[in-house]
Image 1: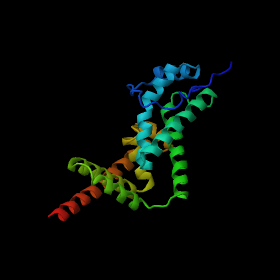
Image 2: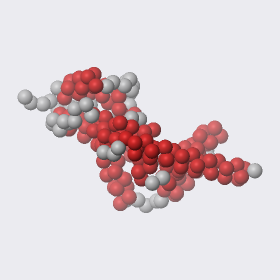
Image 3: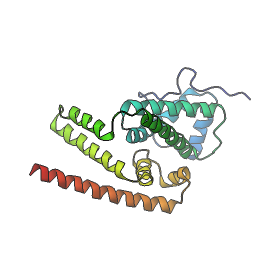
Image 4: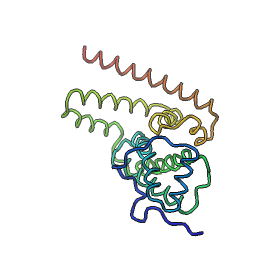
Length: 216
């Protein structure tokens, strides 16, 4: 039986106008996937609505650039649509870990590409952004500074610790899904997550103390 290709009219790419749907699991998600593979564009839009914000959030956290994160998000959904239409998805009941495996691999490829073409250090990029923030309101400046400090702190974590925080808090994965994605024991990931959050709290407390000293 032939398969119809998703996204012939570019519908594989995420549409920012699509509002995120509520969480679906099990039979309902399986039904959406089957309908999408059969060429049901509404089913595909629902799948995109379920996941595109989470995919973008993870890409934005790791790549630290809105435009590049959007490109990666679109690329991910084009890849997923292609794999579904070609029958390359065989992990029944494990769509979310499978999807985010595609995301993680695509982000890794993009990071490597950026590193090959990098002309500025992270600090230089952050300094440029700080200059832009100065022209905004005090509340906005404080909020964006706090976010930049959090991103700095995340970058100071080891790769494994940072990954578990990003997958949990940006991608919104359950620990069970993370265990499937990373092929690691659930208890290991729970302990790593607890340790990573403790490190972040310590680093952020140090930042707040430094800011208070500078303003005194």
